[in-house]
Amino acid sequence: MADSRTTSWTAAWTAAWELLLPTAAAPPRRRGRVLQGALREAVRSGRIAAGTRLPSSRELAADLGVSRGLVTDAYEQLTAEGYLSSSRGSGTWVNGAAQAAAVREHSRPVADGAPGTGFLPGSPDLALFPRAAWSAAHRRVLARLAHSGLGYPDPRGLPELRAAVAGLLTRRRGVVADPECVVICSGVAQAMTLLGFTLADLGHRAVAVEDPGSPEHTALLSAAGLTAVPVPLDTEGVSPAALAASGARAAQLTPCHQFPSGIAYSARRRLELLEWARAADGLLVEDDYDGDFRYDRAPVGALQGLDPARVAYAGSVSKSLAPGLRLGWLVLPEQLVDLVVERKRTMDLGNPTLDQALLADFIERGDYDRQLRRCQRAYRERRDALVAALAEHFPGTEVTGIAAGLHVIARLPRRYGPEARFVERAARAGVALRPLADFAHRPGHDDGHVRLVMGYAHLSPARIAQAVALIADTGAPGLPAVPR
Image (cartoon, rainbow, N blue to C red; front, side, top):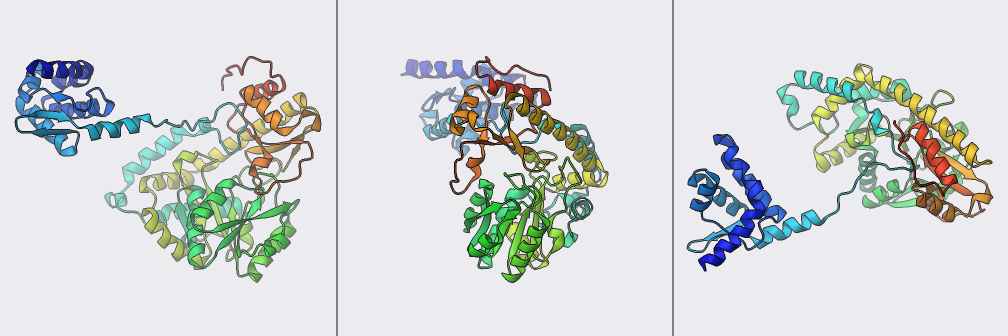
């Protein structure tokens, strides 16, 4: 029996030795924590298998060159946490339940969110993130932040950030922004979720959405208990007649640069939609997802500036800085502020104070405006590179929509279709594409053209040219590496 126990421990010990060995080399005051962490990891990783009987505290202490009390404390701690079990006279064993949980955890694939080679829309160039300026702002903010500033935040957002955002939006986007009506949130996704729940609380059952439009908005509204009603677009924007027929009293729009069609709502259509909202006692929800990026003229101001009482305005830094920051804002009609803030409080108690203080400092010092200019130059150059490459390799291609944002709509001549085969051919060449049809809520008429929603912001001009050439020549062995 002793030989069996020794053999069992010897096998486990051999597998886990490299994890436990650093315990002896650790400073005396840290050896206990190091041993506990090493044993915990050995059980989680399966290096010590479930059901393995561990050596006595005296044996393990002698092998590691540490005190017996240190090993006893480690065994007791991991037994209390459920990793080990013990009973008088039978020793200490690895729990099977802990091991099973670890196996399930490690079996999950880890998704890589980094965009690969392709023209998938919506991705900014994360390499343009201003690391040095952001790091400097972090040091400044942390040095002056009061201890009380690390407490639970105001769910509306840090006062200095709300003031900075209000000034920024008034100056750059023509928004009527009282800081008291600004709510800081975790990007436009949370903004839409907050508004969805608030509208549901007010008795709304449906929200009209653009068709084609962002499927994410439909999912967020559905999660809030609302029905998303697709409303078709014409060349000027959402059809007022179709909107009136939808039965909804709220509509989600992207009027400055419609996603994905790329059109800008006409001045006449903006006024018609505001008339609808007033007559229906309704609300327009404006997603200004890339309104700062216009390449042929100054950006058109936000719809919200025409009637702040009928338009809720949402934006974020996801396209200008990085989506991983999860920082955005809502500018609300006054009558909705308290309802949205209460929903925000119950949802997450507010956004992290330090992140908000960082963004406020970044805006106030002019760093955010500099970042917008930097992105504007880079994205204009990349759009031009894509248009030129399409003209060279796919003659007759029509690029539609305004010169703005992070994507174009490319309509290729019929000779390059059918669309499904063209997209599949590009995928085989290693280039991902999204057809416009992917963003339609209802199937449309197929006229034989290939219509693509092509995002370009995350690719360098050289890589854009090579990727388009690669689609045109599927015999190429692969996309060569190009320095950014």
